[in-house]
Length: 162
Image (cartoon, rainbow, N blue to C red; front, side, top):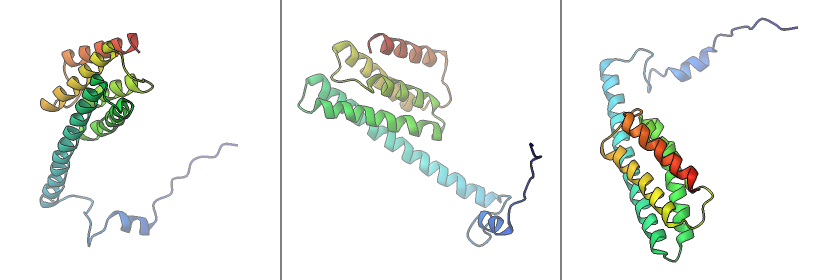
């Protein structure tokens, strides 16, 4: 009773929406159009760097609040979880999978955590430091063997002290 698949070409009105000759780009990009697109991507990358830097600063300030035992440590831990989740989502889009991996590790570690113990604070601080290094050195891709080993070590420490 299985039928052979039928390939249906797209309707002409869909093609018109996809290729807008008045406002949009043609199917084959001209050099000037390619330069415009590259400028947009470069501007977005700069904005990405600024946004991640702001989130890293928030992580560090929140960690300081928790370490001091300040009033609102629960909110500070929630801020750490939230910022790490946002960084995790942003990394892959701009070719920073290592940033995503470290942020995921931090988020997974703090996910159900209340107020962390001193050793847990050290692990969180090391994970935040790793995020800083990835951004400061602009490590795109998976990084080197050292970064991979660091990620594995931090994840192992997180599993041990969860």
